[in-house]
Image (cartoon, rainbow, N blue to C red; front, side, top):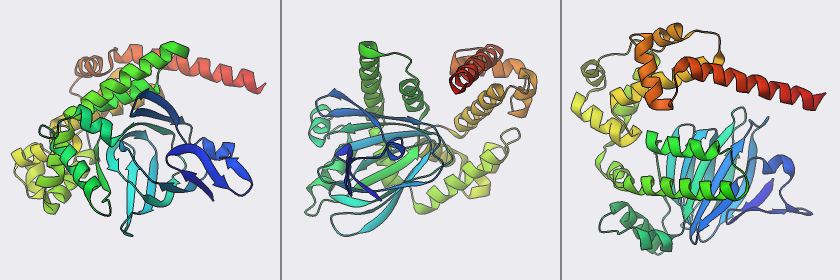
Length: 333
Protein backbone atom coordinates (compact mmCIF):
# COMPACT_ATOMS: atom_id res chain seq x y z
CA UNK A 1 0.00 0.00 0.00
CA UNK A 2 1.24 3.50 -0.88
CA UNK A 3 1.93 5.84 2.04
CA UNK A 4 1.56 9.57 1.41
CA UNK A 5 2.15 12.75 3.34
CA UNK A 6 -1.04 14.82 3.47
CA UNK A 7 1.17 17.92 3.66
CA UNK A 8 2.49 17.11 0.15
CA UNK A 9 -0.09 15.13 -1.82
CA UNK A 10 2.27 13.77 -4.46
CA UNK A 11 5.13 12.85 -2.16
CA UNK A 12 4.98 9.12 -1.50
CA UNK A 13 6.91 6.68 0.62
CA UNK A 14 7.05 3.32 -1.13
CA UNK A 15 9.58 0.57 -1.59
CA UNK A 16 11.95 1.84 -4.29
CA UNK A 17 9.67 4.66 -5.47
CA UNK A 18 9.60 8.33 -4.55
CA UNK A 19 6.37 9.28 -6.32
CA UNK A 20 2.91 7.80 -6.48
CA UNK A 21 2.31 5.41 -9.44
CA UNK A 22 0.22 6.84 -12.26
CA UNK A 23 -2.79 4.62 -11.60
CA UNK A 24 -2.81 5.80 -7.97
CA UNK A 25 -2.14 9.45 -8.77
CA UNK A 26 -5.46 9.83 -10.59
CA UNK A 27 -7.20 9.70 -7.19
CA UNK A 28 -5.27 12.75 -6.01
CA UNK A 29 -5.73 16.47 -6.47
CA UNK A 30 -4.43 19.35 -8.54
CA UNK A 31 -3.19 22.08 -6.22
CA UNK A 32 -3.27 25.86 -6.76
CA UNK A 33 -1.69 28.31 -4.31
CA UNK A 34 -4.21 31.16 -4.23
CA UNK A 35 -2.66 33.40 -1.58
CA UNK A 36 -0.25 32.92 1.27
CA UNK A 37 -1.99 30.48 3.59
CA UNK A 38 -4.79 29.64 1.11
CA UNK A 39 -4.66 26.66 -1.26
CA UNK A 40 -7.26 25.40 -3.75
CA UNK A 41 -7.55 21.65 -4.40
CA UNK A 42 -9.36 20.27 -7.45
CA UNK A 43 -10.23 16.61 -8.07
CA UNK A 44 -11.89 15.88 -11.42
CA UNK A 45 -11.30 12.27 -12.45
CA UNK A 46 -13.26 9.48 -14.15
CA UNK A 47 -14.48 6.60 -12.01
CA UNK A 48 -11.71 4.26 -10.89
CA UNK A 49 -12.17 0.55 -11.61
CA UNK A 50 -11.32 -0.65 -8.10
CA UNK A 51 -11.26 0.88 -4.63
CA UNK A 52 -7.98 2.65 -3.84
CA UNK A 53 -6.40 2.83 -0.40
CA UNK A 54 -3.57 5.03 0.89
CA UNK A 55 -1.88 5.15 4.23
CA UNK A 56 -1.46 8.78 5.22
CA UNK A 57 0.07 10.93 7.89
CA UNK A 58 -0.47 14.60 8.64
CA UNK A 59 1.39 16.89 11.04
CA UNK A 60 0.69 20.64 11.06
CA UNK A 61 -2.72 20.71 9.42
CA UNK A 62 -4.67 23.52 7.76
CA UNK A 63 -8.38 24.05 8.24
CA UNK A 64 -9.95 22.33 5.23
CA UNK A 65 -13.29 22.92 3.55
CA UNK A 66 -14.23 20.16 1.09
CA UNK A 67 -17.14 20.14 -1.38
CA UNK A 68 -17.86 16.73 -2.91
CA UNK A 69 -20.07 16.74 -6.01
CA UNK A 70 -19.40 13.09 -6.85
CA UNK A 71 -17.53 10.24 -5.19
CA UNK A 72 -16.97 8.82 -1.73
CA UNK A 73 -13.88 8.69 0.46
CA UNK A 74 -13.58 7.21 3.94
CA UNK A 75 -10.84 8.16 6.38
CA UNK A 76 -10.03 5.71 9.16
CA UNK A 77 -7.69 7.71 11.36
CA UNK A 78 -5.94 7.80 14.70
CA UNK A 79 -5.53 11.24 16.28
CA UNK A 80 -2.92 12.69 18.61
CA UNK A 81 -4.80 11.34 21.62
CA UNK A 82 -4.70 7.80 20.26
CA UNK A 83 -8.44 7.85 19.61
CA UNK A 84 -9.68 6.14 16.45
CA UNK A 85 -12.50 7.47 14.31
CA UNK A 86 -14.00 7.06 10.84
CA UNK A 87 -14.90 10.09 8.73
CA UNK A 88 -16.65 10.16 5.36
CA UNK A 89 -16.82 12.54 2.44
CA UNK A 90 -19.64 11.68 0.04
CA UNK A 91 -21.62 12.97 -2.92
CA UNK A 92 -23.57 16.15 -2.23
CA UNK A 93 -21.91 16.85 1.10
CA UNK A 94 -19.39 19.38 2.33
CA UNK A 95 -17.06 18.94 5.26
CA UNK A 96 -15.03 21.23 7.44
CA UNK A 97 -12.10 19.68 9.25
CA UNK A 98 -9.04 20.42 11.32
CA UNK A 99 -7.07 17.18 11.66
CA UNK A 100 -3.53 17.80 12.94
CA UNK A 101 -1.15 15.01 13.98
CA UNK A 102 -3.26 12.23 12.48
CA UNK A 103 -2.44 9.06 10.59
CA UNK A 104 -4.53 6.31 9.10
CA UNK A 105 -5.99 4.94 5.87
CA UNK A 106 -7.88 6.80 3.15
CA UNK A 107 -10.16 4.64 0.97
CA UNK A 108 -11.64 6.02 -2.27
CA UNK A 109 -14.65 4.12 -3.59
CA UNK A 110 -14.72 2.88 -7.19
CA UNK A 111 -17.54 3.17 -9.71
CA UNK A 112 -18.28 6.89 -9.40
CA UNK A 113 -16.48 9.88 -10.99
CA UNK A 114 -14.34 11.78 -8.49
CA UNK A 115 -15.42 15.43 -8.57
CA UNK A 116 -14.61 17.61 -5.61
CA UNK A 117 -13.16 20.99 -4.68
CA UNK A 118 -11.24 21.76 -1.51
CA UNK A 119 -9.93 24.86 0.24
CA UNK A 120 -7.06 24.62 2.70
CA UNK A 121 -6.57 27.66 4.94
CA UNK A 122 -3.84 27.91 7.55
CA UNK A 123 -5.06 28.56 11.07
CA UNK A 124 -3.05 31.80 11.16
CA UNK A 125 -4.64 33.04 7.92
CA UNK A 126 -8.12 32.08 9.10
CA UNK A 127 -7.58 33.96 12.36
CA UNK A 128 -6.35 37.04 10.51
CA UNK A 129 -9.34 37.36 8.19
CA UNK A 130 -12.19 36.19 10.43
CA UNK A 131 -13.01 37.72 13.80
CA UNK A 132 -13.83 35.08 16.39
CA UNK A 133 -16.08 37.60 18.12
CA UNK A 134 -18.25 37.53 15.00
CA UNK A 135 -17.68 33.89 14.10
CA UNK A 136 -18.28 31.28 16.79
CA UNK A 137 -16.98 28.63 14.39
CA UNK A 138 -13.45 30.06 14.64
CA UNK A 139 -13.63 29.74 18.41
CA UNK A 140 -14.37 26.03 18.00
CA UNK A 141 -11.34 25.57 15.75
CA UNK A 142 -9.01 27.57 17.97
CA UNK A 143 -10.34 25.72 20.99
CA UNK A 144 -9.46 22.42 19.32
CA UNK A 145 -5.98 23.69 18.44
CA UNK A 146 -5.25 24.93 21.96
CA UNK A 147 -5.97 21.57 23.59
CA UNK A 148 -2.87 19.99 25.12
CA UNK A 149 -3.09 16.94 22.84
CA UNK A 150 -4.76 18.84 19.94
CA UNK A 151 -8.35 17.70 19.46
CA UNK A 152 -9.39 17.09 15.81
CA UNK A 153 -12.47 18.89 14.51
CA UNK A 154 -14.80 17.54 11.79
CA UNK A 155 -18.32 18.47 10.71
CA UNK A 156 -20.41 17.45 7.69
CA UNK A 157 -23.55 18.80 6.03
CA UNK A 158 -25.26 18.90 2.65
CA UNK A 159 -23.64 21.41 0.28
CA UNK A 160 -25.69 24.64 0.16
CA UNK A 161 -26.65 25.59 -3.38
CA UNK A 162 -24.48 28.73 -3.41
CA UNK A 163 -21.36 26.69 -2.62
CA UNK A 164 -22.36 23.92 -5.01
CA UNK A 165 -22.58 26.36 -7.91
CA UNK A 166 -19.13 27.84 -7.19
CA UNK A 167 -17.57 24.38 -6.85
CA UNK A 168 -19.10 23.25 -10.14
CA UNK A 169 -17.80 26.35 -11.95
CA UNK A 170 -14.29 25.60 -10.69
CA UNK A 171 -14.50 21.98 -11.87
CA UNK A 172 -15.80 22.99 -15.29
CA UNK A 173 -13.37 25.84 -15.94
CA UNK A 174 -12.65 25.82 -19.72
CA UNK A 175 -9.72 28.26 -19.59
CA UNK A 176 -5.99 27.61 -19.81
CA UNK A 177 -2.79 29.33 -18.74
CA UNK A 178 -2.87 32.68 -16.95
CA UNK A 179 -6.58 33.17 -17.58
CA UNK A 180 -7.28 29.88 -15.80
CA UNK A 181 -5.13 30.93 -12.83
CA UNK A 182 -6.98 34.25 -12.59
CA UNK A 183 -10.37 32.52 -12.84
CA UNK A 184 -9.51 29.93 -10.19
CA UNK A 185 -8.18 32.59 -7.82
CA UNK A 186 -11.37 34.61 -8.20
CA UNK A 187 -13.67 31.60 -7.73
CA UNK A 188 -11.65 30.26 -4.79
CA UNK A 189 -11.91 33.58 -2.97
CA UNK A 190 -15.62 33.76 -3.81
CA UNK A 191 -16.05 30.25 -2.42
CA UNK A 192 -14.13 31.19 0.71
CA UNK A 193 -16.20 34.35 1.23
CA UNK A 194 -19.45 32.42 0.84
CA UNK A 195 -18.21 29.72 3.19
CA UNK A 196 -17.28 32.23 5.88
CA UNK A 197 -20.78 33.67 5.72
CA UNK A 198 -22.10 30.21 6.62
CA UNK A 199 -19.63 29.38 9.40
CA UNK A 200 -21.92 30.38 12.23
CA UNK A 201 -24.61 28.12 10.80
CA UNK A 202 -22.17 25.21 11.01
CA UNK A 203 -21.36 26.09 14.61
CA UNK A 204 -25.06 26.43 15.40
CA UNK A 205 -25.63 23.02 13.82
CA UNK A 206 -23.08 21.38 16.11
CA UNK A 207 -24.58 23.00 19.23
CA UNK A 208 -28.33 23.29 18.82
CA UNK A 209 -29.56 19.99 17.35
CA UNK A 210 -30.33 16.98 19.53
CA UNK A 211 -29.66 13.41 18.37
CA UNK A 212 -33.41 12.84 18.05
CA UNK A 213 -33.86 15.94 15.90
CA UNK A 214 -30.98 15.02 13.61
CA UNK A 215 -32.29 11.46 13.11
CA UNK A 216 -35.84 12.76 12.57
CA UNK A 217 -34.63 15.31 10.00
CA UNK A 218 -32.62 12.74 8.06
CA UNK A 219 -35.62 10.39 8.14
CA UNK A 220 -37.80 13.20 6.77
CA UNK A 221 -35.27 13.82 4.00
CA UNK A 222 -35.31 10.13 3.06
CA UNK A 223 -39.13 10.13 2.95
CA UNK A 224 -39.10 13.29 0.82
CA UNK A 225 -36.70 11.70 -1.69
CA UNK A 226 -38.74 8.49 -2.02
CA UNK A 227 -41.16 10.11 -4.48
CA UNK A 228 -40.35 13.67 -5.51
CA UNK A 229 -43.26 13.72 -7.97
CA UNK A 230 -45.83 13.16 -5.19
CA UNK A 231 -44.25 14.06 -1.84
CA UNK A 232 -46.16 14.36 1.45
CA UNK A 233 -47.27 17.79 2.65
CA UNK A 234 -44.98 19.65 5.03
CA UNK A 235 -47.35 19.20 8.02
CA UNK A 236 -47.77 15.51 7.14
CA UNK A 237 -44.02 14.98 6.80
CA UNK A 238 -43.33 16.75 10.10
CA UNK A 239 -45.99 14.72 11.93
CA UNK A 240 -44.55 11.50 10.51
CA UNK A 241 -41.16 12.16 12.14
CA UNK A 242 -42.44 13.73 15.36
CA UNK A 243 -41.55 17.39 14.79
CA UNK A 244 -43.48 20.60 14.22
CA UNK A 245 -43.35 21.82 10.62
CA UNK A 246 -41.61 25.07 11.64
CA UNK A 247 -38.90 23.16 13.53
CA UNK A 248 -38.47 20.73 10.64
CA UNK A 249 -37.96 23.61 8.22
CA UNK A 250 -35.37 25.17 10.54
CA UNK A 251 -33.55 21.84 10.91
CA UNK A 252 -33.54 21.38 7.12
CA UNK A 253 -31.89 24.80 6.79
CA UNK A 254 -29.21 23.88 9.31
CA UNK A 255 -28.47 20.37 8.02
CA UNK A 256 -29.19 20.67 4.28
CA UNK A 257 -28.81 24.40 3.72
CA UNK A 258 -32.39 24.98 2.56
CA UNK A 259 -36.04 24.59 3.54
CA UNK A 260 -38.01 21.39 2.91
CA UNK A 261 -39.53 22.95 -0.23
CA UNK A 262 -36.14 24.30 -1.33
CA UNK A 263 -34.55 20.85 -1.07
CA UNK A 264 -37.46 19.27 -2.94
CA UNK A 265 -37.22 21.90 -5.69
CA UNK A 266 -33.47 21.36 -6.00
CA UNK A 267 -33.91 17.59 -6.30
CA UNK A 268 -36.64 17.99 -8.93
CA UNK A 269 -34.38 20.26 -10.98
CA UNK A 270 -31.49 17.80 -10.69
CA UNK A 271 -33.84 15.02 -11.79
CA UNK A 272 -34.89 17.11 -14.79
CA UNK A 273 -31.28 17.91 -15.68
CA UNK A 274 -30.29 14.23 -15.59
CA UNK A 275 -33.24 13.19 -17.76
CA UNK A 276 -32.56 16.00 -20.25
CA UNK A 277 -28.97 14.81 -20.56
CA UNK A 278 -30.19 11.24 -21.03
CA UNK A 279 -32.04 12.46 -24.13
CA UNK A 280 -34.76 9.80 -24.27
CA UNK A 281 -37.66 11.97 -23.04
CA UNK A 282 -39.10 15.27 -24.17
CA UNK A 283 -39.51 18.30 -21.91
CA UNK A 284 -43.20 17.65 -21.17
CA UNK A 285 -42.57 14.06 -20.07
CA UNK A 286 -39.67 15.16 -17.90
CA UNK A 287 -41.69 17.95 -16.27
CA UNK A 288 -44.41 15.62 -15.00
CA UNK A 289 -42.04 12.78 -14.12
CA UNK A 290 -39.99 15.12 -11.90
CA UNK A 291 -43.03 16.57 -10.12
CA UNK A 292 -43.52 19.92 -11.88
CA UNK A 293 -47.11 21.04 -12.41
CA UNK A 294 -46.52 21.84 -16.09
CA UNK A 295 -43.74 22.14 -18.70
CA UNK A 296 -43.83 25.93 -18.32
CA UNK A 297 -43.32 25.55 -14.56
CA UNK A 298 -40.23 23.44 -15.26
CA UNK A 299 -38.96 25.95 -17.83
CA UNK A 300 -39.20 28.90 -15.43
CA UNK A 301 -37.47 27.04 -12.61
CA UNK A 302 -34.82 25.57 -14.93
CA UNK A 303 -33.88 28.95 -16.42
CA UNK A 304 -33.64 30.43 -12.94
CA UNK A 305 -31.37 27.61 -11.77
CA UNK A 306 -29.26 26.78 -14.83
CA UNK A 307 -29.61 29.86 -17.02
CA UNK A 308 -30.99 28.01 -20.05
CA UNK A 309 -34.29 26.73 -21.40
CA UNK A 310 -34.64 22.94 -20.89
CA UNK A 311 -34.88 22.15 -24.62
CA UNK A 312 -31.86 24.30 -25.42
CA UNK A 313 -29.90 22.70 -22.58
CA UNK A 314 -30.79 19.22 -23.86
CA UNK A 315 -29.83 20.03 -27.46
CA UNK A 316 -26.49 21.60 -26.51
CA UNK A 317 -25.65 18.71 -24.20
CA UNK A 318 -26.36 16.13 -26.91
CA UNK A 319 -24.19 18.07 -29.38
CA UNK A 320 -21.30 18.21 -26.88
CA UNK A 321 -21.66 14.51 -26.16
CA UNK A 322 -21.66 13.64 -29.87
CA UNK A 323 -18.55 15.76 -30.42
CA UNK A 324 -16.80 14.08 -27.49
CA UNK A 325 -17.73 10.60 -28.73
CA UNK A 326 -16.43 11.47 -32.20
CA UNK A 327 -13.17 12.75 -30.70
CA UNK A 328 -12.71 9.60 -28.61
CA UNK A 329 -13.44 7.33 -31.58
CA UNK A 330 -10.93 9.28 -33.69
CA UNK A 331 -8.23 8.84 -31.05
CA UNK A 332 -8.95 5.12 -30.73
CA UNK A 333 -8.75 4.59 -34.48
